[in-house]
Image (cartoon, helix red, strand yellow):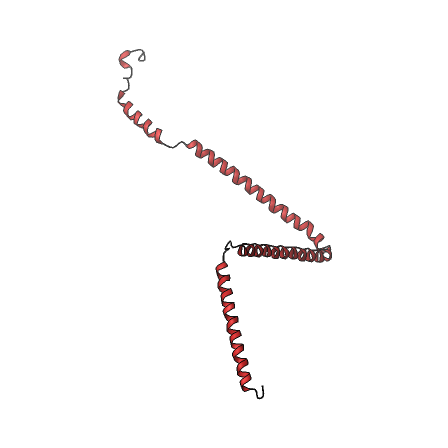
Length: 158
């Protein structure tokens, strides 16, 4: 019966909570959304687990390969050594020939540009070297002439 008595009913809630509720909404509206973060963490952990499984699988296959193929390699090593030596020498010769071919191509290109007057890098040093060689040759020629005149002066009956 107390339930039906209107004087016994609870009073209504005060309406002053509304401003606090709106300020809470404002704070929550500026809070970061955690859904992208959770999605990133999920993808990160799934990727890390996948890579860990693949690494373990690769390591297992490598160990099993060593176990099964080591006897094969040991029994066939008299064939492998000359074959690998021949393969190494062939590859080294090919790379050496390619290197020399590249050097010849670069030198030929430089000389072509130099003789056609296109002034490649370092052409000024070639000109100064040519001048020094010419000056040295003329000095040697003059010195040889001087020595020949000295020999004529010293030699009796010449």
